[in-house]
Amino acid sequence: MHPIILLFVISLLHAYEARGSDTVTPVFVQKGKDLLLNVTAPVKLVKRSEFKWQFKDSIIFRLFDDNETIIIGPYHGRVEIFLQNHSLLLKNVQQADSGRYTAAVFGNEINYVGKYSVTVQDPVSLVNGTVDLLSNSSDSCNLTVTCSTQDSHHINSTFRCDTNTCSQEEGGERSKVTTSGTSLRVYLSKGFSVICNHSNQVSSDEHITMIRDFCFSNPAPEPRSNIIIPSVAVIVTVILVLVIIYIGAAFVRHRKKGKHETKDKENTLYETVQVKSVNPLVDQNPTDDAAAPSPSSIYSVIEAGP
Image (tube, rainbow, N blue to C red):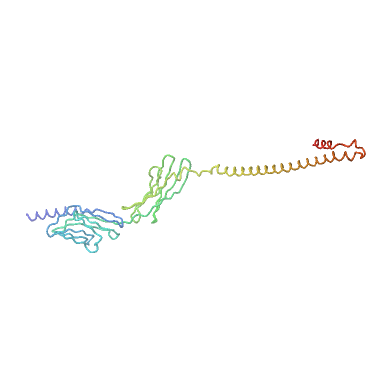
């Protein structure tokens, strides 16, 4: 009976160990980054035992009970092992590195101290948000925001806003999982911001649409001053030109008038002199010396002239 009981206990232990070892930890890593995998239990090597890191059925690293280590050929230069805690660092991971990684002590039995399901992902593509304005006034606004990725995925949702708050309407497509496993979402944030988010387990990108940039702001009429100022400038210029022309004409007219008046005075003086100086001599009898005016009288007449 004792051997039977012993076998039963051993089978229970193996069953317990199997249940514990079935826990596989999912790990996501971005393409081109480094991957660090830790062991989940202390590694104890006894005689004729060894520790291994494996990728699927391929061995990456071996540590023997005498502390001898071996890194298998394809992983030379890509793998680093930290012997103090037996962690594995895999550098510059690529899509082909996705799969199951295990760490275990091999001896009389297999004792797993780490199981991982690794998925290598590309970073997500950029996302952009576009706005379709459905209605707009000074106190309300309806708009639809469409989120699109560079790999041709898109969703949209409608938002209704007043001057105090916004709400996301039912309908549309608020989120979706793309064929490449990324998540695309559109949602309202901080009252008047709409977020387009494109993400996966290793990266994300988002676009923010500010609702107030599209709502509650009707196109403002062109300021009247912009129209009035050129008109005033033209009017002032015309007035200045007219004033200058008027002043110039007045000045020319004044000069002409002055010259004309001066000439008239000269003519008048000349005629007066002729009349006053000549006529008396013509009328005088040549024999009548007593009646002849003296030179001083002629001078007096000239002085009295206008």
